Length: 189
Image (cartoon, rainbow, N blue to C red; front, side, top):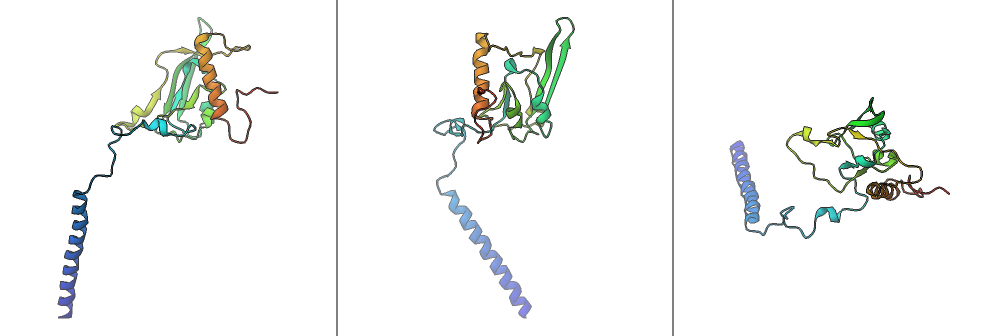
């Protein structure tokens, strides 16, 4: 008889907890929603709210990349692959491919720190959602691109002057470890 009473108590307790849980669930049906319909109904773009040193998805400016392969060598998980070939006719080196696998990237920033021109840097982009992981491999070279050769007296091509300045500014402000004065673009004195 004691077992039957215990069994009935268990059933009553189960029914009571189910109704308690359902009461909480139904109370949320009549409340005003707390979620924001991202990205449609926000005051300003999320990229504007990110800190300046935010490490987003990597981007490469191929116009000022020297092809030194420092970023490929320093990457601890080999998410950067670079192919360079020599054109036998013109005797100039050109990129055949420059790929970054965003799936493998751990956003450590080592590649941006070692880049002498600041051509590889973190962007403010963070949304990398996709259905196929293969689409997260960023191909920065679709056809052969000549390597950039820095000029000794400074860049004279007006198209490249601003790109070099942006790269060196990035090195000074973001890719330099805190505590060290000046980056790769800082003047030595």
